[in-house]
Image (cartoon, rainbow, N blue to C red; front, side):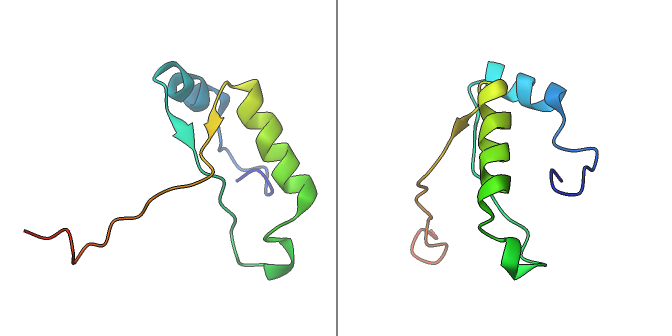
Length: 70
């Protein structure tokens, strides 16, 4: 939503998330592959996160839904 100046991400949401200790993963919309790793957009997202006290999660561990089934 940052690129298109939509009504998200909202400051109010991220302030609440920060107070709750939530982190965030940066993601990119692949509708325009040339912009997937746009440096300016990444820096803007990092500034937004920093402004709101949001920790950026750089590595996540995915679960194997078939291995973890019981």
